[in-house]
Length: 482
Image (tube, rainbow, N blue to C red; front, side):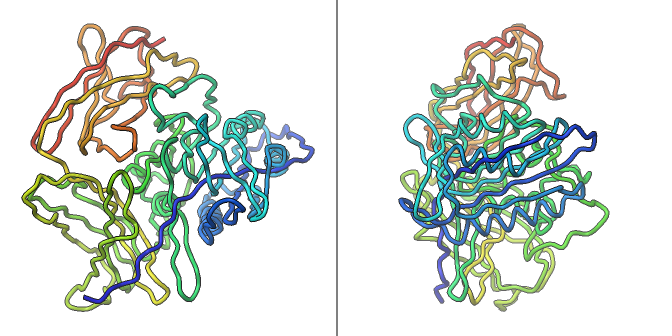
C-alpha cells in the first residue's frame, strides 16, 4: 500500500509582554480589544515554527468575523518579554479600557512546569524570558472590565490550578471577571502540527479545535443552540469533543459569557471539512464507530489514528487510512458517512486514540478536524471518588472532583443533599480522558441543573461508571457549600 507522508506534531509551551503609560476611558460605549502574542523561536527550546505564527493569523481571522466588531487588535510575534515588558504591552494594547469593555488576550508559546507552577516563555529566539503565570493573572486583575485569556501552551491549566493533582488544587483568589480558556491541564502537554515540503504551515491542535468551534471555516460548531452567540460554556462543551490530544480547562465553569457573536442568517464560508459528528466515540469489544462530516469541496481525504503507549501519544507511528470512495482518491463534496472498526484480538483491548481527518495535498498532510476515541474494557476495577472539600460560592470557588481509575470509562455524577435527594447532575454520560493523573479530574461550579447556586448545606456525590458492560456505583464523602 502506498505510504503517505506522516504528519509532524510537536509538543508546545508558553509566553510574556511589555510596558507603557496608560489611561482609562469613561465613555459609556462598550469596546472590544484584543492582544495576540505568539512565539515560535527560542534559545533553549525547540522551534515550533510556523505553528505559533499560524495560530496568531487564525485567531485574528476568528475575531475579525465577530459582528460586534473589535476596536483594536494588536499582535506581537517573537518578542522577549519579562514580566515588566509583558505588563507594559498589555496596558498599551488596552489603553483607554474601562468597565464594561472586554479585552481578549491570546498567547501561543512554550510553557514549563517548574515544580511550583506554570512559567510562560516569551522569546525572540535569542533571549528566553520566563514569566510565572500568576504574574500574568495579577496583571490582568489591574485591567478594568472583563478579560478573556486564551492560553495555548503546555501545562497552561496551571494558571487556574486545573488539571493538577487534587492536593495542589487552589480556589482562592480567582476573579470571575477573568475568563480563562487553556489548551491543556496543568500537568499536561499541548501539541502543534506542522507540515510542508514546498511551504511550511501549521497551527496547534487547540487552534484546530477553535477553528471548528468558533471559526467560520467550521461553521461555528460550538454554537449548540444556533442563536448566533457562542458562550464560554458552549465552547467548553465543544472542546470536550473537538480537542483530542489534551484536555482544555476553563474558568469559570459553564460560564454564560458570550465569547463570540456571528451573523446566524448568513451562510458561513466553511473550510474543506466541517460538522464532524460521531454517533459514539466509544469502542466496546467487537463494536464499530459510525461518524459523518461534510466535505465542502473536492479533496483527497484520509483518516489518521494515533494511539497512546505508556501515557504518551505515538505521533511517530500513526495509522493512515486513505478514503477511496468509489475507487477514487478524490472525494466529491457532500455529507460523508463512515464506519471505523476496532481490530479484533484475543485480549480485552482498551485505551485511547486520536482521530484526525486530514487533507492529502502535494505539500503534505493537513489536519482538518479531530476527536478523542476510547476502547472500553468490560472488566470491573476499583473506583474511588474524591473531592477538594468545602466551597464558598460567593468567593467564586469551584469544587474539584477526582475519579481514580485505570481504564477508559463513561461517567455520570449526581449531587445529593443529606436527605438523599438529587439536587444537581453536573455530568451526564461524559467520557474520561487520558489526563496523566491516574484518573479523571473535573470541576463543578456549585450550581444545579438550572444554573442556580445550591443552598447552604452539606452534600455528597454519586458517580455512575460504565466500562463496556461493567457498571459501577461509587459515593464520595460529604462537603459543605457556603
